[in-house]
Length: 432
Image (cartoon, rainbow, N blue to C red):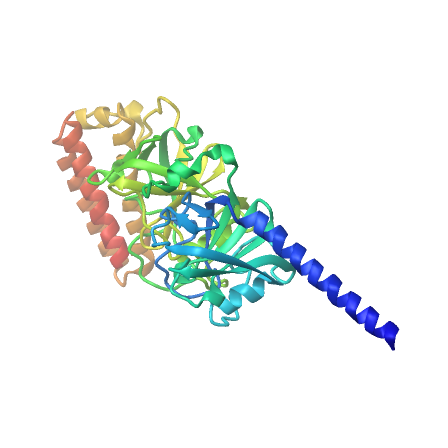
């Protein structure tokens, strides 16, 4: 019996010693350390509309310092945690996430795309503040930091988001940055993006029945040129609101299907590369560049992610666009050759010769031609009196060509006429 008591006493002492060592180890890991927000994670299985989005550039790049006297940060939300206590605990990441998200069954490491097994035990702490608070408006029990290793951590943040943190080295000199609330992530512009790109394809969801604002391979979009530079984005589609002081933030690799669901919705059966007729596997991984503009705008934000583009290959990029559409763009050579919808060797009028001398005008000529053929096809297959309507449509086109030719060599006049004609034909195609 004495032996059993001694054994139990030894077990208790060993347990207390291990817990003390665990606490000391974690204190060394967190107290006095400085971190940078490297990712913003959202629940990809949730249908909630969030204020923050996947890798939101309002959070990525912000800094946090866990000190013995206070926790400070450059995050947008107020951080005023004084005399913090970092209370070690052994649990799993899934348990931490679920408890923070009111027991939501979909709230787990996998659906937050954290890249680790949420069922394994993980070093973590509750954060208790003598005064003030850290994190969103929640109980002290739910303010936590989880550390899968010494260089990475996760914290729960506002609006159902989780932040992935990367430890900063002492030479990062972040103490000065932490006193500057305007600190944000630097731009990750890929020099290979520099130059002109032309929209070659427009994709909409073919699995959902609706009357779209944008058509598959919409002639108003196909052929337009966008110019990407480190400081701005300009182009045909952005005439009134070019993206000025552009910032590109590269994110971790993510599957295309996951990126599409972050952008367009959570329905796995209807939101994927196949449903958008994209000629790329939805399981392929890419590093999206999140685009933000200090002035103006490029494209729209998605459901849970900002406006983005990915490089499908060295000469092809994909970006999300308005009305739940996606654009595929191809790199243009330094001096692209005009390629209108007619044979330039047979050009006779001044208007045709001018179109054959300009790549941009030739692209608009193709748009008119594509829009006309699209409406012609729809009329043949959908009209109750197709023959009569086709005769009228062809007659109207010939009348318009004569009107276009009155522009002669006036480039602005020609572009205006072709832009308007394309818009009119596409509007009729949408209504048919």
